[in-house]
Length: 182
Figure 1: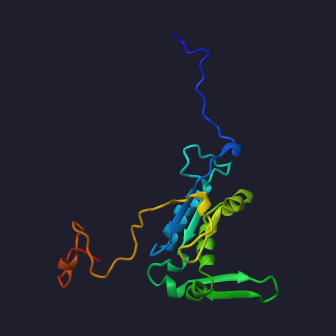
Figure 2: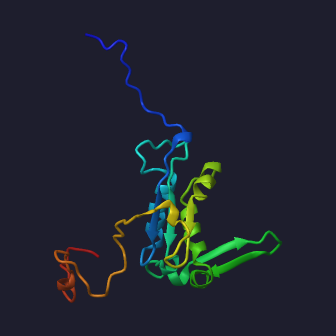
Figure 3: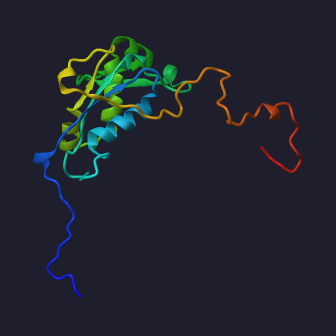
């Protein structure tokens, strides 16, 4: 028996009939890079089962409390943001701490936009990103859904250990066997 006449094709979506959702992400205590990758994936539409690389399938993303974003390690003290004014000798540098105090929205926007494609479509995806200081935003009418994601390296209180998590305090002060190198 043959299957002549039956076709099973792949669904190719059209850019016209995309149903866009709205998501709100609370940046309080979240690591900048981990928040940015989640937001960029949503903006690019990678979580959509009908994802197509050449069509903007992404949803809208609202980021609130951007002034409460964190960086890991010493990056908060060392990170610099550079921009060019367009005039000779117009290179401007600003530290993360100063930019966070002056314009925290710019930090989150730059991080997310840097993870999107560098093309017309990437710029179109970036228009669906809204970043706000504080927990208020003007997009209540769109009924955004809160988006929670697992931030595995979110800051923990010093000395806090989860149950079942191995501790390596028993190794402190012990002499290593002669055959093992560091």
